[in-house]
Structure formats: structure tokens, C-alpha cells
Image (tube, rainbow, N blue to C red; front, top):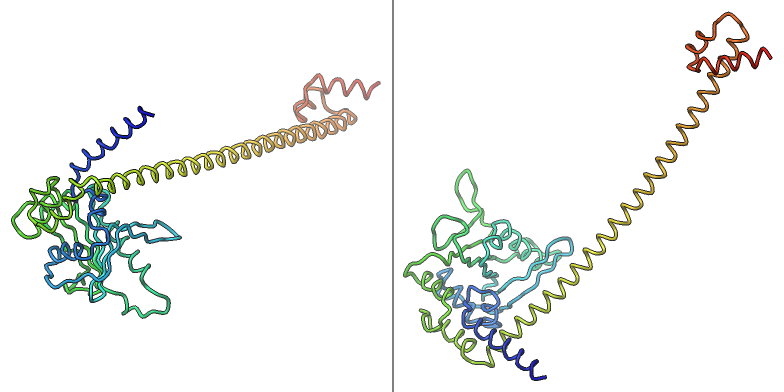
Length: 314
């Protein structure tokens, strides 16, 4: 029992040390700090979009969007403002998690999940998919990238009101957005520029009760990972068993096919031999060909023809 308590305490201390190193660029930590925090989401969006009057009326973290025919997605943050505009904020440390086609897919999933049957297309709200990335994944050395559809021939906006924005957290400058990205990558709250972010992160760094929430999330993620691993293993075993059964069935079919082919070949050979024998017997009875000639014409051996000739003569 003592050893168990000691191990639990060691595990807890390790987690507390890990929490001290966390930044808002770590998506689990970001979601915990901003959980159900409409004003916090609005604060970030105001800076990114340069809209000082933006007000968030609804906000969800870890919002799941199902796709029965393909990939489902879990959004880090989905917020709605007072005008009905939807904002998705995705924290991406991995470059592969912020691929352009993933941004396109998320944008389409938002449309599909909010668009109601028989609703007019004009009812689709304006949407923003915003990636805050650890690195400059678009490689143009910019702090922010606005991706919009345009009419190629004229350069005029297409006005579908679906916007994609990439914010490059590796870019450093003293703009409001640059200072925000500094804070996102800052593990020490006291080194942050914005008190709004400092006040959010300090409790999780210094209050053991709040830090425990982060530990619980890690434990939940760990359990989900184990459960997902078990399910994946089951799927792989089922696939392997199905592949084995299919291979065995194909082998059985191949074996049966080979046996059938062998039997057919044997029957054909016997039939050919019977025809050759009948032909040889007719030739022998006519008596105008030699044993060598009959053998050559029928494909029989000279010994076989000789035996047939003796049989007829006898």
C-alpha cells in the first residue's frame, strides 16, 4: 500500500512539473484554460481579426462534428458572435495538423453540420477557420495569412464568406498580434504581455486544485488512448482473421481448381489416346501402312502399334 501511495505521489509530482512547462500552444492546456470562457475567446478573436467590438455569445471547446460517411473532427474551440458568425480556433504544434486541405475540410464540416434541411443557402453564416501554428507552415515569413476565394480573372472577391486564417506563432514583432503569439509560447505566466492571459494560466501553474484538473485530463486522454488502442487492435485482429479466412478460401478454391484441371487434363489425355487407338486399329486393318507410319500418324509408340497389330492378327 505504501509503495502504491509513493508511486501515485511520484506520478502527481511529475505531472505538476509538466504543467509548469505547458504553454497555450499546447492544445490540451489551451482548452482547459479557455473552457466555457466566452470573454477569453472574444479577447483572442478581437486581436487576430482586429475587431475591437467583437462579442462572443456562444463558445464550446472540444466540439465534435460527426461525419457518418468519412472523417469526423473535434474542434478545439467553436465560438459564435453576436452577428451569428462562427469561429473555429485550432491550436496546431504539428505542421501536418495544419495542412491547407485540413483547413478546407474543417470549413466544409462546419457548413455541413450547421446547415439545416430545406434551409436557403443564403442562411449559411459567415465562418472563420483559424489555425494558430507553432511554425510558419505556409513558409512566407508572415505573422498572419488571410486565405480567401477570389475570381481569378479579375481578382475580385468571391464572397462565399468562408474565411481561413493562419497565425504564425514563430513570427516575432511588437504588434498586438505578435505580443499575443509571444504569450501563447510562454510557459512562465509572469513573462506574458497580456494580463488577461496571465490570470488564466497562473491558477493552473500554482494552484494544486486547478492543476489537478489538467492531470485528470491527461489521465482521461491516456485512458481514451488505451481504449482507442484496444479498439484499433481488435479491428486489426478482425481484419487479419478476415484476410486469413479469405486466403484460406482462395487457397481451397485454387486447390479445387487445380484438381479439376488435372482431372480434365487426364480425361482429355485418355480421350485422345482412345481416338489414336481407334485410328491405329483402322489403319492396321487396311494393311497398307507400316508400323512406323501408323505410329507417326497417330502419336502412338511403335510398340503399342505392334501390340495392336498382333492382337488383330491373333
